[in-house]
Amino acid sequence: MSACSRRAALPSRAIETHEVTDDLGRQISLPQHVTRAISLAPSITESIFAAGAGDRLVGVTTYCNYPAETASIEKVGDTLNPNIERIIALKPDLVFLSTASQLEAFTQTLAEQKIAVYVSNAVSLDGAVAGVRKYGEIFETIAKANATAAEMERRSNALNDRLKDQAKVRVFVQISKEPLFTIGKASFLTETIEHAGGISITKDVESAYPKLSKETALALNPDAIIMSDSEDNREPNEVFKNSSAVKNGRVYKINADIISRPGPRLVDAIEQIAGFLHGEKN
Image (cartoon, rainbow, N blue to C red):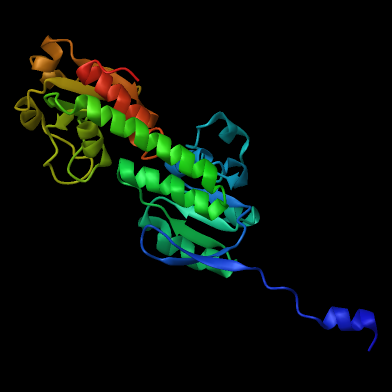
């Protein structure tokens, strides 16, 4: 056998892999060096950039609009309806999901293409911080990720110290005016309001984003109203016209993206809400 033939007969070198655990407790086998990834949630996209690995993203959703660099990354559909064929064509090492609901539909198809699926389920500020650190480990950008996570924690702790003696403000979070949607027990925003020195007056309502009847809302009488700023949510629902919040001019708008994404900008949201409620400045 010639030297060329012997070389041709040698097996190809196996790709070095390692195991990581996703937020559902699943063991995921990844290439040692992840160079191509797809994010199917804006919060994950922002967190990967914050971890210093935005250049590894080869695909994101149409909702992924921050930071500005996302404009040049190929879009693979929206969060609820991603294009599986386009995802496969981009040949990622890893696809990130934000919920388990898509897992069953994705896993088998992508596993056949040897594409790993990682579910990230940050539901709190602590979860967002941990997520940034985890992405640093996955993409080997640990120093940048840890620095970002530490700064998020520093800002949060500093705000907690400044607010520790402040009375909690009773807050209603209006997600949409009509129908009237708010936040409930299962929403990460309930904790966000508490971090900012408030207390959500719907914190005990079951589900994450309940729709309230006008009769229920009328009895709430919040001291402040925080509105997610969008075209259909420019002013408080009419049931609040005689509330303390409206009478005292304590109605505030906040960017819909930073309040809806449990990622690195959640600290920005907390600082802004604290500013509304207690006159705190960033």
